[in-house]
Amino acid sequence: MKKIILFDIDYTLINTDLIRSAKTSQLANALKISEKSIATYLNNYSSSLNSSTDFDPDKFINFLTKDHISNESFIRNIFYQNPDIYKSSLYPDTISTLNNLFGEYVLGTYSEGVNDFQMTKITQSGVSKYLNKKHINILKRKLQTKELIKIPQNSIIVDDKLEVVEKLSKMSNVFPVWVNRKTAEIHKEIKTVFKLEQIPNIIN
Image (cartoon, rainbow, N blue to C red; front, side, top):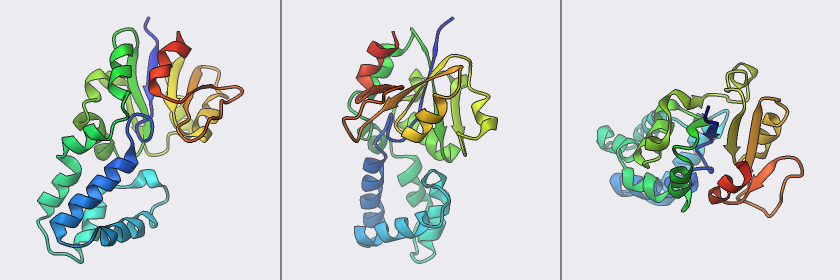
């Protein structure tokens, strides 16, 4: 039986900062206002959320267009019909790593966020073609016990958040891999990579 590898999405497969920056520019152009104004709307909306992973484009669009008359369908397409942004926001080795692992492993996601938005990221970036639909997990709070117990036995889970991999490391049936994109630290107990392309070497 093939081993299962589940990837986080944001800051693991895709650089979410690049998505935010590109959409800020496009929204500013569409609404004829400054990027600084869009950034303020984003910050104000985000501050109302319990977690950054609760960002919902549809709710943000409603928040934004209260003050600006616009074609909401066009604005919505900036988030949901914009493959160039999602493809260009992938980390340089995302596709090559998935392609390398595809076939030998069953690939999926273990992600936190709003389902439609997360699915848009993986479909429009081209990532979804490497993923087994049965193992695409997009959850509101992925560290809740009720979600953790659903993880398939002996899965490898790749995540950029230290709190996530440390929580997973306490489970006997899960093997976390930390993608550390911020420092040179190697975790003493958890397998650590600095780039996705290093994953095949540490899991074989």
